Image: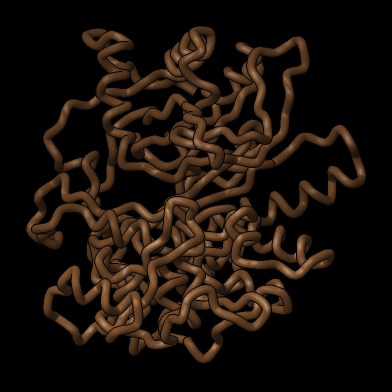
Length: 450
């Protein structure tokens, strides 16, 4: 096919400035779990340690070249910086220019892979064909063997999405907004069915490819890193409960690898968009990510974490703490006897520490000192656990008391330098006592005079 002229007045670095800035609101890019080592012939590799544009789970910063092919767009989504009615500098890369940038950045050790998205140029199929051509050149002409994540374009021809899927490690399709009503209000050119159709195509392609690999060892891989999606949070009035139910449904129905949540940033100033006096809802985004983790790894269901009477997370508590203080009938949990699913519901106990507890208690009864060494965060867990039938500290199983200790620094149980000791309780620890305690009164309390 014949591609559009990219504008001779713009250098490749001018385009890079425009299109990297235009891509910054797309967050659906992370560790892939793909394993493909260098073969000695091609350039680059993709290893299981994780390829992402920000930080790996062990804290390492791993970088991708994250750009748009173009910020031209035929759509007029009210929340999008690149919408057709927005007066901003425009630029378009040719496939060869993206290949040149990727290879030159990789040779300089600036990046370990490519994340490529795009506005809609002319039509979805036209744009998808440009993306396919770019990835085909990288793999076959430039022999780039590193990680590649691309955005599939809803509405594009299915054969273009299928062909691209055999060249990339991960594909994603943005859900954009949590509900069809929100999409209709803010993105009238987009339709939920148009988005879900290629998502289903990729899911079926991944399943069929796994069967082919079983039969034929050298069968080409199709989207081996799985697919993901992204939702904008705060542009429409959905509750956390609605958003979490949508995410849970996507995981179950489409086998998604990740659902990403992007705090709404009002970059267009459209009057139909909500005012955000406190700025983007970043803390809400963070709580949704934590809840998403509970859905995927901790055995929670969306209906357990929230409901219609309690549709939003308490931003002062993480979602597991929020659930625990509302379900105190499930606690305390005896560390030396509780099954794995109960351990995973204790605040301060993660997947790894729960596994270590289960392994260690086979040979000995665990104490609070042992839990500290295992990696349990006792400052959160101590309210919800016992060791050998005893709590670490004589705390009350009372929602208000626990919430105060978890959220207010002055109320928290005080630990010593070894992380294990705590201060002696006195009569003046009662939350109803508001007066200042005098040094003489503390001394009298310590020796039992009062």
